[in-house]
Image (cartoon, each protein chain N blue to C red):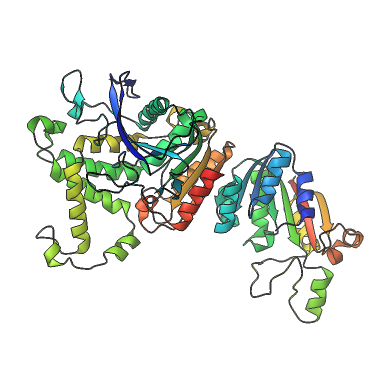
Length: 198
Length: 364
């Protein structure tokens, strides 16, 4: 389930009547919300059978594919916005995936857990892999392949030529806290980005 | 379930895409359930190449279940307690609708080989005339598998305002080279039968049953998956007491012999050729120089495309082509791949996920 705060941010960033693709769309709630509030033309990509059925029930267009495959197959498509919430770190090649996302759409919304979050650092200091609200699974169950810190992610954006149009940092209660916005690499549990291309 | 079988006569006839004209024609129609007062609960199901109007329930005279009986009926995926389901034998068929075995009113003899070429577009046009006859302005859903799926797609293209949803299963926007090749081998076996007489066999009071049988045997191989054949028959030898022919060794041979024989007794060879020609020549984008995206731009219906993992005749990627083109022109379209072990035939068989998805799609 996506936090209410994150879906609010996304709603603000998505222009009315735009064409949106949501990679890893889950049960289609976000797309349904954007269709109802922003009158978008939306498509979801999802692999989980139950989630797909729930999308169809909501009348959401959903394509059964894993995200990597979807991003590759839709490379020549024409979206205004591509959304990838809490999934970028699960992909085989996040940098290639992001480049492709910015090819198939003008803008890209990415949310990611911050591995530099102080609780992660503390856990590692104590010699354990972190388990936090935004990284809830233990190391042997997690689907995460490429965890990074806020600084790592922004460095990748800069190296790859992705323009960060907007960024919002959330604390562990998914609120825009003061500490999280002043020192995100240490105090943000999650980063929410709106990216564009040069 | 209320089942009604009716031969509907269209005295106005119709112009075919080939340029020929049928001065009048009949459609053999079967309906299930009841049409509501608003006439808003109609669902049209379109049969695949050798199917017919008998889609559900058990026919009285021959005790045969309909081809989609696993999915159509009370409380089934296509629920006849809620929806009025319609299926007709396509033009050019041999189950009651006007086709090569029918009498040509201009000559008072069977059409035989002179029956004009029909196309998927012609079938959809004739089904629209049927919808008008039934008073149904807008289908809740038009759905079908294989060649039936092509009709469901063509409905969305030909009559965008006359259906809410389209279910396209185990189908493609156009037949592949391999599809055409397979069909040509089947047709050639019919043509080479000494009793074919260049399609004029009815005048000689014979039927090219041998050729038709071989064609069907080849067809059956293409409808099943390698895995399903392994599971169903393996390399088991046929029990000596139930062999259909002396030279049969394996169960799979016996099965193909039996199925081929049965089919050749009931199907018409000219219909076989017509139906496969219609399948081969179908191209949803033919009016748009092959540009599928342009072709799909007019669609207003919501599409549900289903592919089956083990289908090698119309593999899942053929459905994905339609999905991608539809998405690129902002048409509402979902795509799902199902496991279905029975190869291309999987679209005929119920599975919990298949049923659930169809049911959910209709209700959404």
